[in-house]
Image (cartoon, rainbow, N blue to C red):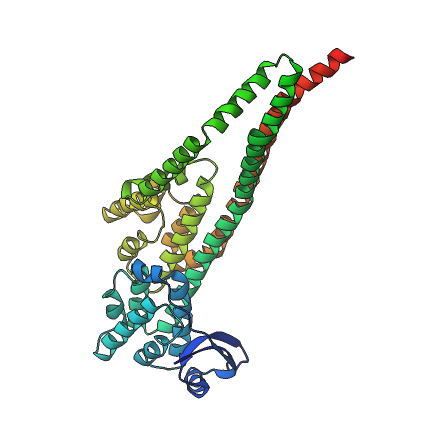
Length: 402
């Protein structure tokens, strides 16, 4: 089998590209033709070793799952049977773990099992939300639509996470620069000035003496300080791997003033899209709520959401239940209220997704706009204090000479 990087077009001249495993170009061309695509170019690629870490994780990466949904939807839309589609997809350039998983799914399909049942057999590999949506697609006869909706959902979620990471880059760079400048001042600039001033036999101001003493203590105990910092970081990371640690961190994310709006926006956006998809597919309200609890991405929110689910079970309407636990933006609560009154909750949620996605971006911009000046003030203040401590004795000497 050879690995080909290809480009193709459909009857509407829309371009598609991807990577596929095939014996030769002819097989690749025939496979694409069955999907309604016409091969325009193909290049062989060198085989790479699959990631060992992935095989150990036991889960399909969301990026691969998104690509799978897109390609699967194209095949189903072209009229290719589910079993044959999976048979083709298991030869795609996925990780070894994913290809092995699809091979098992393919065997189960050939034995007469439904796709959703075959996927649910591998609970650790596929998210519950994903398998539930596949079940909805099979039952409604709109599997291709559901697959495209899933791909949109995962792509949007990935974009939000990417924007969050990008928004944190500049503050982190500022923090690193600040630490670097302070380190240079502590280990090089201050000792040099201290040595020069000691030869002049000048009485040091209290601030200068304090800075010099602090510099000595840091330099003399730098190894211990680094060990302590590394130990604290390690303890925090290990603590975060436990349920209580994850819950604690997620609670802090929802409580800390600077980042709580970002977290609330992200959770609100994810809930609106996922809940809307489930309801639009015909899932019962209570069943959809149970499924959604696992995709919110925050343990603190998940716990409070489950309490809200309990209130709905006891007869409270959805709007009041969610409002009482204050985990989503008020705009979403108002939209849900409108949806409940009109009986169009799924449509209201799906139409509001773009708004909440934009809210995430706005909250990220607000957060970075707040963090950056704070870091600049701290950095400027620390450097100013050090320069003042170093140069004040020199100014005193110059005044005495005048």
